[in-house]
Structures are given as structure tokens and as C-alpha cells.
Length: 83
Image (cartoon, rainbow, N blue to C red):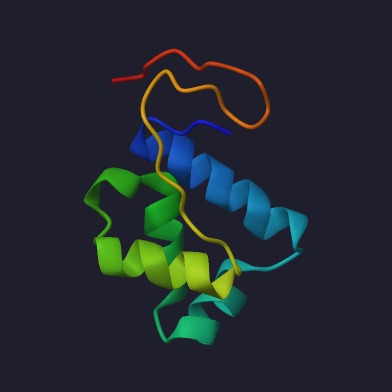
């Protein structure tokens, strides 16, 4: 999945949280942040600190991969720039 905006990243992470049937509170408790911090990230990710992003990723057992724009993604698609 290509993610090229804060909103797209927040949506992808929220989807993963819901797929795992985790609440915002459960994720927050796993990494010592407030539930409102997780909610704020999901609703307005532009203001989220990188440290918070990586805590949420860790709680969901996710990792971030970076690649060149326009590079073919593993799913075979090329996403249009959102920025």
C-alpha cells in the first residue's frame, strides 16, 4: 500500500487496529500514551509527533517501509501523489 499523506497513513493504521479488534484504549495502554492521543492521531494526524506515530506502530506490531515515489509497489500498483 502506498501512503503519501498523513491522512492516508492514519487511515491505514486505523484499519489495521480495527482488523486486530483493538480499541484505541488498548493500543494506548500498551505503549503508555492516552487514548485521546490515539484518537487525535486517527482524526488529525498532521499534528502527531513522530515518537507517537512509532509508539502506535509498535503497539500494533507494524513497521514503516520507505520507497521512492513512482516505484512499483509490491501489490503491483502505482499510486498518484496526494501532495
